[in-house]
Image (cartoon, helix red, strand yellow):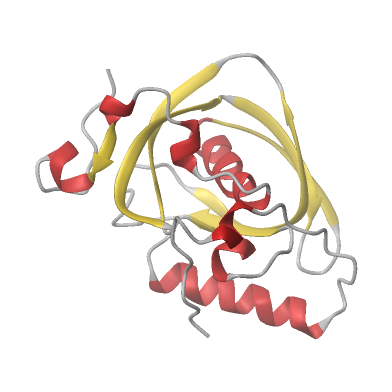
Length: 178
């Protein structure tokens, strides 16, 4: 089922989410299906449970081809529950970000370039990955939602934050990075 996505300004987006404790709960499986339906319907690269009003530490992400991110590399379809992130270097990489909870806007956001993440899949099986670049950016963006952080809170230069049409001349494709 496609769920409405909360928008910036809704206080529920600023709360810290609770860990999942029962992986066999049918409500968890239903939540994940609804998140997948909602993300696909909106051409998202990821979605966090708090974005649809559920305060659980659940995120999904993945990208093959997406009109909102036409030049982004592929990211495997992933369900990540109770994530743990470890940054593997102090190296940052800035890039354009958008968010289903902040529609119509983009911002230039610095993120850690290399990270290790671990957590559980929808069956309660633990897994881990080391990633970099866009994949690392997506993981950080989605996991930020679990701690009540929206990407505009990470923007450092507000001359590079605004409406897509104004920033990119009426297209959804970001300008090349500096």
